[in-house]
Amino acid sequence: MFEGCAACADGGPAAPLEVTYDYDWHRDHGTLARWHERPPAVWSYRELLPLPAAEAPVSLFEGGTPLVRLEVDGPGTIWAKDETRNPTGAFKDRFHTVSVSMARHLGYGKVAASTTGNHGTSLAAYAARAGLRCLVFADPRAPEVQRGLIQLFGARLVSILDRRPNLAWLVRERGWYPSTGLTPWPVATPYGIEGYKTIGHEIYFQLGGRMPDRVVCPTSVGDVLYGPWRGFGELAALGAEGRLPAMVAAQAAGCDPVVQAFAAGTRDVPVHPGPDTIALSIGDETAAAYTMDAIFESGGSAHAVSDEALLAAMRLLARHGIAAESSSAASVAVALELARRGEITPGEDVVCVVTGSAAKWPADVAMAAEAHALHESDPQTIRAWLEAFDAER
Image (cartoon, rainbow, N blue to C red; front, side, top):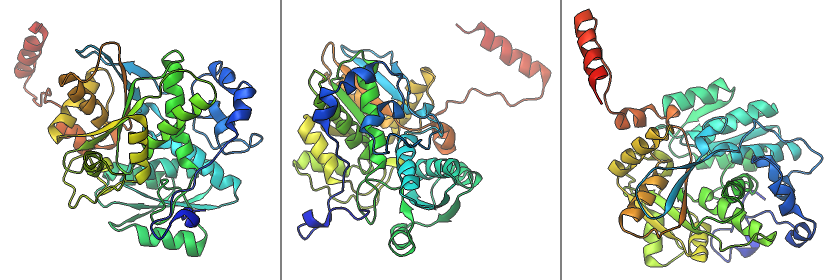
């Protein structure tokens, strides 16, 4: 289960396993109508989540994040799906509420994952809630605050650059559950990405029961792009009307393998050697083929933006009260670039998934924040500074 579908590998990497449901039954029995009546939250859509209905999920009340209209010039409407409002400040909570719930349901007592920060912090929190032992392999560049939070939640931390061999050994030889992404490299769970589907479900209902025109997602391996795409497809299978949205991958110019694959018209994503970007969370050297499937099937696209554009998007979001890390702001940076090019049409709804809070990425905050602080003890200097600020318009 954790190493993909060997039968369809055809001599190459195993394809990921995915959960399937009886969509015809749910369409005929009014599941979509019931969803209309429920408040937005991950487990509001549990008919199409893998945990048995009689079993309580491991939940920290994730999901139900706001859809915020951004005040920007242009003929269309740009929205921010603000995933910073999740319990640990990141979209990863949707993943782990489902993944850890299934780990406990399947009888696992130990969970492990690899992280650059947000993923490991979220797993540690949900493992604590579930009473499971947790071990996180962290990129040495992960922020100190993230590494501290992982340990605060009671997990063990191993800081190492090449995290795959030890993670695979724990899963294959020692019976640990991998709360990892969908791509089976080296091991994967098919369950966590089911939580990401609910981003698509929520957007649909928050727009009043209609599909957005485009959804822009910060993209590394691509689970957060592919998951909502599955979600929109499920809505259509249940009877929701409207054209499915175009899925747009947002990457940093210093690491853009998905953009390269899109330009070449292939689902085979190349390796981007030596990633060089401040956006660590989306700095993976390559991505999954199913990411390209979602882009091509939806009529979407892939774009890269500079680190300077990421910082500018962080500042724009901050003016709307949203503190986003640089990787998370990539979706907004790409949407702004599309608007600047005139590629967003009148009446178009463009939703940007903003994946994680800047609060856990202090280096990003230091780069994006404009200096407005006074460090002074002299009373006269302080009063003069206050008077000058008070006089500003």
